[in-house]
Image 1 (cartoon, helix red, strand yellow):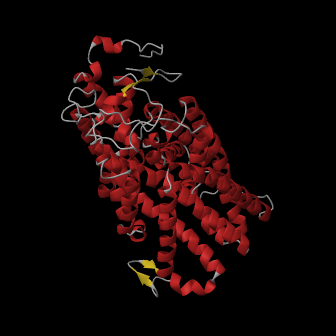
Image 2 (cartoon, rainbow, N blue to C red):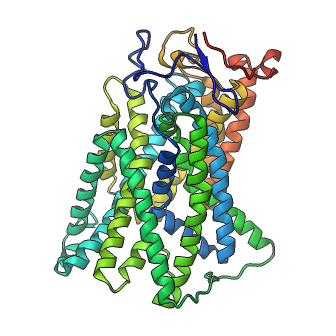
Image 3 (cartoon, one colour):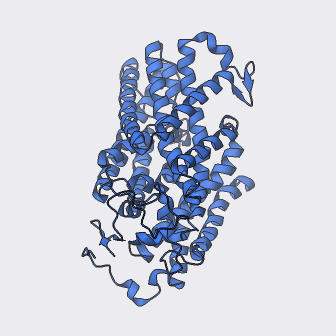
Length: 515
């Protein structure tokens, strides 16, 4: 049995992860298809990961989320610090979660089999997939709103069709349906062409949005005479209130990226070496986000003298410019950017997740289309406008992302000492390393329930009781921390992977062995 390792930390992978997709004769059909099997050849480099993060960061949702931090009462420099500290935390966690998938060349739901069992991995897969379906519909709706700006600017006579009171059905206007349908089909086409086409698409999207945002920022600063006030908050905080608010803002930044962070293995599996992953993450997260943060603060600050009010939505900002070409170019770019992040964050994830549930009947493409159809049935335009619905659905589901992350990290790094037996990820043999009890790791499920209850309570109870609302900002950290600690001690007690024996405390040898 071959063992490979990536530096600087030892990651032992039993079974060759180079050559195909590799589907060995002993792999169980219940757990295997060409999309889930280990990759025969990993071809992505650091730029592909950098472009992935550019697409993920430079979306309309990203700018609106960053801009919303001003409403907390923070000054521009305080918002800037929160954004940078938050993204550095994301960088650290992304490097942690990337390693098992990159080393074994398998997507997130397969990597989850290490901790939850070959069948139990469907639990985290379905949770992550459900969240992605909900957000897929919302992001498509937001992109459609950007496209509406373009259509109405080019053809003003379409205005009646954009009025839901005149031409509306189930809460969406006729023009809204057209824009939503066009983007729904466009995303499906890009997705259906496969990961290589998606890689090329996001390689284009990230830089394209950068160019437009630099032009938009420069134009607004020029219009403002390069004289802007960086104190954009309508509130004034002082003393410990500033510290507490900045910590909450930093937590919100981490929570915003919690979804893509959890299933980052869906992308790191394609990268040639872990060094390339780290390099791509460095340029795509702190460096990229540094520029993003500066653009966000300066662009938002310039809207006040230019338009007379603070605008944090880049689409609305572009729509205010008295130039048809600029409006069309800007809105189209943001539409493409939102499509890019939607495919990356909310199409690929459920594709792998749902395929993992029944590999022989649900391929990667079919899994993605299940998510796409499900997003329509949610009528996201109604759901997104309902704060209660968002809070109790995405809030509750999102609260489970932290526990899933904590359990995976505790299992891989502390319990298994970064060892992966790839062949056993695809076998129902009771002697397999990840078979546990009929394919389910009861210890991981117990830890998920325990930490999940606390994490969900941190979201629901403050809303119901009307007290300590700030706790909800930390639901991801609560779930992750409790899940991590609870699983570690339960796994040691259950002696998973020999972790309860004295020998488990011995350091993993740094040597790379073959054979």
